[in-house]
Image (cartoon, one colour):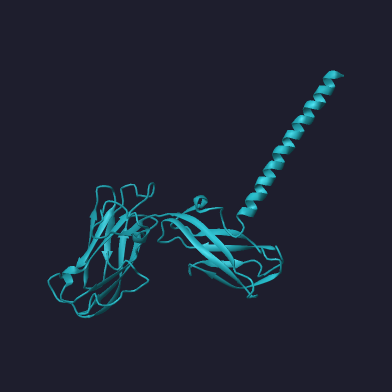
Length: 280
């Protein structure tokens, strides 16, 4: 009888311990669910990663923290490329719904973020703010290299990374001053088996010439300079596309946009404020 009693006691203790662990896990899970309301993860450090050729998709839980029912009248995002679909536009007090997002990762690399605002029909209430974090592992990283920067290294400043548009503003009789340096590189595990290579560069214009140079660390430096450095160009504003063909199976073509302004007033006007990289 004593042995049976002890057995019953031991089983009871085991059941109690199991119940405590399960309860603890449920509390932790519930806490985490609350923590990620109006965001896809708790913080940028926990951001998921996708490859550059894969759009980032997520479903974000949305919570109306107001003590009254609200209606969402407008959805705004810091990235116009974001596709958004809100399941419910009418939310009860403390009510929940979900937001599906789809963001292209093309021509991106490293940490990314988008902020979304759900504006409510009642002006007395502040918008519901949503944070989205993710990371992109690029197939090929395309960076601008400044005049005094090492072309073997990727720029540490994010402002010089992932640059696909270049602006030049020079006098037509100073074409020798036209110069850009573009660095192509693959993150670890992305380089083709025979290394990253540029097979050809398509450029229909007459202002620039492009010279790709293979570098010792596997990156490729493209030097853009005037086709006729001693000549005189025709005044005007030129908007041109440059197609860089590579041997990367998932990024065989890189499209660069060049805006070239040839004017006697070069340097006396402000360049496009949306492109601070006009000078690399």
